[in-house]
Length: 537
View 1: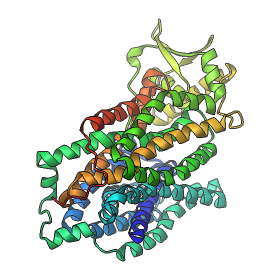
View 2 (view 1 turned 90 degrees about the vertical axis):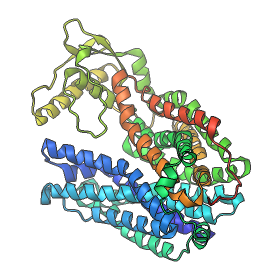
View 3 (view 1 turned 30 degrees about the vertical axis):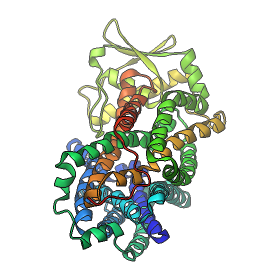
View 4 (view 1 turned 135 degrees about the vertical axis):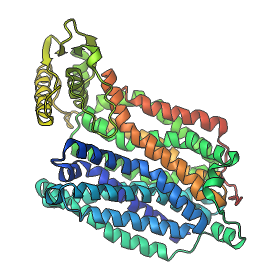
């Protein structure tokens, strides 16, 4: 059992490592691969990268779900780990835009699609493989290790990036050393494949094969009859909507909130993230174990309810702890955008390609990226200005200007607003020395408890919902729609809500709504499955 858990968790951790390095290095990669692209090519590149990261994960879940349900668990997740590791290693060897033009980003998009498809097949395979080996009374604790593998992968990615940056310096890192974390995945891939080759097929699947009961059409069985489809829908709305919201809020959106909205330096934010990640690892296993004792449902719903109780008050406390000067300045000197409301767009831009060039949009996005709360009022003459206390900064629109000129205009506008804000007592960035770090860490760790209580028992809960015949397909699809789409859209949607309302806390509503949906559906429809034998039909 120990070998099964180690081999499955290690492979999944390496997959997460591969996925996280890309996320952490996205700013460097966009400079290297999309420098000097024409607007149309840039649009396609941004679309492709976005789509590949998240949209292809459910496709991978369907492809490898069928492979896993028809040919076996072991084969499916040997292929997924090889595909993921190979694609990541090749990203480290890609020629840049400066070297080969558009071919560089095109190859990057293809490899990113392969990464998304591989990740779509990996998680379900590893969770099912461990669950089908585990004793009924210990399934939660055993699969908790698969859940913890995400934190091991994130930690490994952060440590390798930080170590490489420290060793070579920022300039060298941005020029060529960004490739090292990608190339390192070859070592991890070799270890992972070696460990997995030694494993036997899962006993539940082997028994099904012996009895000649393997599903001929897993997709039709999983989604084509109401009994199974109902379970898929309960899995998605009852568990995965909250999972996408709570986990991504805690580990991804919180990074944006601390660094962009509250102005904490990147290094401080990374250290906080490392603390959160290290603490989370044993908690996944603990909550998996607890769900074996008291049931999956109370532990997972408890995590969701804790997150719901925390979102608004704890985010306000985090802001006050991280940047007390900013909160004080916002109270003393409110900021108002006076403009013609008809010229303001909804700044929802999931693929990062829309052009927001009206004076209103430029004013609002400058304030949002600085983390400044503001209110909007209709101006008398239709012109746009940002009013800080008694001072007004006039804002011009960028309609009809070239891309470079719009960029220059936005920089000038941001600088002008910035100097006015500083004069009014707004800090340029957060000072970690003034931050209440103890309170900040406690609040962040409360979110970690909520995320791990939901995620720890989740693998066993999902595995127990479906019969062995279609388990890989039926479980993987709702999982990846939840994490890939609900979680993937969280940062952009939250940013849009902040830009529309001018309040940095309004972005929380996205996470609140999806978490609340899961609480209601879980309480009404989710049946307790802890300790039950896995059914085959």
